[in-house]
Image (cartoon, rainbow, N blue to C red; front, side, top):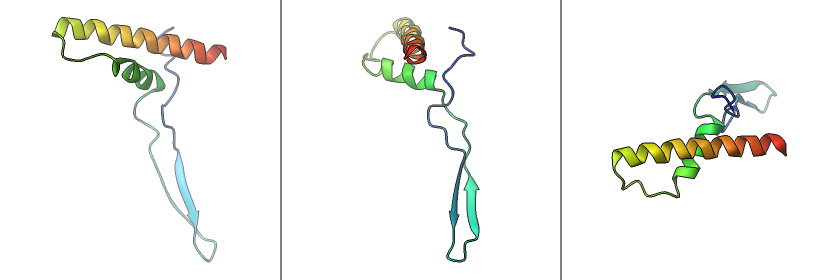
Length: 79
Protein backbone atom coordinates (compact mmCIF):
# COMPACT_ATOMS: atom_id res chain seq x y z
CA UNK A 1 0.00 0.00 0.00
CA UNK A 2 1.39 3.37 -0.95
CA UNK A 3 1.24 6.48 1.21
CA UNK A 4 -0.94 7.98 -1.55
CA UNK A 5 -3.69 5.49 -0.72
CA UNK A 6 -4.54 6.89 2.68
CA UNK A 7 -8.24 6.01 2.84
CA UNK A 8 -9.41 9.58 2.32
CA UNK A 9 -10.43 11.90 5.13
CA UNK A 10 -11.33 10.44 8.52
CA UNK A 11 -14.21 12.85 9.16
CA UNK A 12 -15.31 14.37 5.84
CA UNK A 13 -17.79 17.25 5.97
CA UNK A 14 -18.15 19.56 3.03
CA UNK A 15 -20.85 22.01 4.11
CA UNK A 16 -23.65 22.74 6.50
CA UNK A 17 -26.67 24.52 5.04
CA UNK A 18 -29.96 25.43 6.70
CA UNK A 19 -33.12 27.20 5.54
CA UNK A 20 -34.70 30.03 7.49
CA UNK A 21 -38.46 30.47 8.00
CA UNK A 22 -38.75 32.10 4.53
CA UNK A 23 -36.91 29.26 2.85
CA UNK A 24 -33.71 31.21 2.23
CA UNK A 25 -30.53 29.17 2.39
CA UNK A 26 -28.02 30.05 5.07
CA UNK A 27 -24.89 28.09 5.61
CA UNK A 28 -21.17 27.91 5.66
CA UNK A 29 -18.54 25.59 4.37
CA UNK A 30 -16.45 23.47 6.64
CA UNK A 31 -13.02 22.43 5.47
CA UNK A 32 -12.72 18.72 4.79
CA UNK A 33 -9.01 18.91 5.57
CA UNK A 34 -7.43 17.32 8.57
CA UNK A 35 -6.29 13.84 9.33
CA UNK A 36 -6.62 11.02 6.88
CA UNK A 37 -8.26 7.74 7.69
CA UNK A 38 -4.77 6.20 7.69
CA UNK A 39 -3.64 8.72 10.31
CA UNK A 40 -6.74 8.00 12.41
CA UNK A 41 -6.20 4.23 12.24
CA UNK A 42 -2.53 4.65 13.18
CA UNK A 43 -3.46 6.85 16.15
CA UNK A 44 -5.94 4.22 17.33
CA UNK A 45 -3.31 1.50 16.97
CA UNK A 46 -0.82 3.54 19.03
CA UNK A 47 -3.37 4.14 21.79
CA UNK A 48 -2.90 0.59 23.03
CA UNK A 49 0.83 1.08 23.55
CA UNK A 50 2.42 2.98 26.41
CA UNK A 51 4.29 6.06 25.22
CA UNK A 52 6.57 5.98 28.26
CA UNK A 53 9.30 4.53 26.09
CA UNK A 54 12.68 5.67 24.87
CA UNK A 55 12.56 7.84 21.72
CA UNK A 56 14.06 5.05 19.58
CA UNK A 57 11.35 2.67 20.80
CA UNK A 58 8.63 5.26 20.09
CA UNK A 59 9.83 5.43 16.51
CA UNK A 60 9.43 1.67 16.15
CA UNK A 61 5.94 1.83 17.68
CA UNK A 62 4.92 4.62 15.29
CA UNK A 63 6.14 2.61 12.29
CA UNK A 64 4.27 -0.46 13.54
CA UNK A 65 1.12 1.64 14.06
CA UNK A 66 1.20 2.81 10.43
CA UNK A 67 1.80 -0.76 9.27
CA UNK A 68 -1.30 -1.76 11.22
CA UNK A 69 -3.23 1.19 9.76
CA UNK A 70 -2.24 0.05 6.25
CA UNK A 71 -3.50 -3.45 7.07
CA UNK A 72 -6.78 -1.96 8.31
CA UNK A 73 -7.17 -0.02 5.05
CA UNK A 74 -6.50 -3.17 2.99
CA UNK A 75 -9.09 -5.08 5.04
CA UNK A 76 -11.56 -2.24 4.53
CA UNK A 77 -11.04 -2.35 0.75
CA UNK A 78 -11.50 -6.14 0.71
CA UNK A 79 -14.85 -6.04 2.49
